[in-house]
Amino acid sequence: MKSDEALYYEYLDGNDDALGQLLTRYEESLTLFLYSFVRNIDDAEDLALDAFAVLAASDKKFRGLSTFKTWLFAIGRNQARQYMRKARRQFQFNDNGDEIIDGETPELPLLQEEKNRQLYLAMEKLNEDYRRVLILKYFQDMGCGEMAQVLNKSEKQVSDLLYRGKQALKKELESGGFEYDER
Amino acid sequence: MMNDKDKIQEIKRREAAIRAVKWKRQLAVYGCSSAAACLLLIVAVADLFNGMTKEGVAGSAIKTEFGSVFAMSRMGALVLLIVAAFALGVCVTMLFTKIHDRNERRKKL
Image (cartoon, rainbow over all chains, first blue to last red):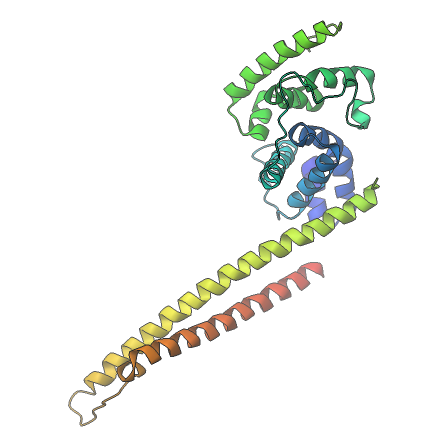
């Protein structure tokens, strides 16, 4: 299987199929991550395409200082921030998660599995910083270093957020009658 | 719901839009800097000639009352210089544009 970096350079050399493969690998998870910012699945999907367009227009700026995935997600985060600044909308949800309709999740194949869906629903009720860190941890399998690069925070901050996020998630899952399995 | 092919087309369309914006910005920077450089060059050359003609050629009978446009009317001369610098800047920018377009064509080939 070709690496992400190889596919990226192939696309820059004019191979559209390479972009298709990158889309297959990351579009869904990036959309889920961006959804945690904008709280609207259509906007999140649109921003994910924007992130790919920025990536494609960046002319071999990828220097291998981070993994391709980290770079893509960091671009996505910047796009989401820009979008939110432009729209001047308040996407923050209150701590009780009142705006979340019980049982509603974005219609992404990644969340079709019952276990993932329940995990995501529990995350939805958490503070947005915890939620972003936990999405990257559980749906992207990123380490603290990678998460720090994506979220533009220090590793210490990310590791604190992760610890507190896991505690909050555990509490949330247990209150819903589920068992928290420390992975 | 877009399929993968549509998504790739959409990404390419957005990519082209981003590149166009980048190029416009680059062009503005090129335009301003080349106009500034040309203005500087013209002022420097004009000033040099102004000094030479005022002094005249040593030991000769050549004397000039108005050796430079600066000596006739300072404001008029400045306006002339700005217009000339702008025109020169435009020429340099057009040259950059042509070079850029040629490079893009070569890349596509």
